[in-house]
Amino acid sequence: MKTLTTQTAMILMLVFSLAGCSHPSDGRSSTATEAVAASTDDSGQQIREAIVHAREAEKFGMKGDAQDLVVHAEAALNFVNQSQKSGPTREHLRQANEALGQAIEEGRKGDAKVAAQRVRDALVELLQAEDVQDSSKRQPATGNGRSASEGRGF
Image (tube, rainbow, N blue to C red; front, top):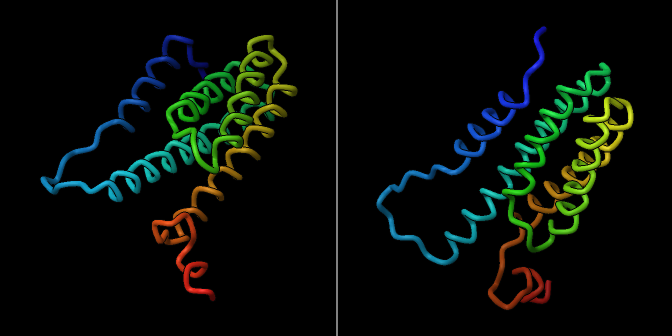
C-alpha cells in the first residue's frame, strides 16, 4: 500500500475540516438555547471525528507504520483544535491535544511504538470528553445552574 505524502495529508485535513464547517440554513430563527445546543452538537461531532482518527492512528502505530500514524494523529489534532474548549470537556481536550502533539513528534522520529502509546493516552482523554459531553446534554437546565431535579428537591 502506498503511503500518503504530507501534502496529501494536508489536503485530507482541509477536506475534513471544510466538511465539518458547512451548516445550511433552514430559514428558521435561532434562539440562544438553540445556538448553544448547536455549538455543543458541533463540538461533540468534532470530538467523535477526533476519536475516529485517533483510533486509525493507533492501528497504524500497532503495525509499526509511523508515517500513517502521523497523518491520522494530525487529523485527530485538527478536530480537537476545532472543538469547543470550554466547559466540562476543556481539561480532557487539553490533555488530548498535548498527547497527540507528542504522538506526532514521536511518529515523525519514526518511533511508532511510543507514538501509538501517546495516541492511546489521547484516546482515553477524548473518550472521557465525549462521555462528559454526552452526559451534559442529558441534564436539562433550569436556567439557575442546577439540573431540573435539583431545583424541585427530588
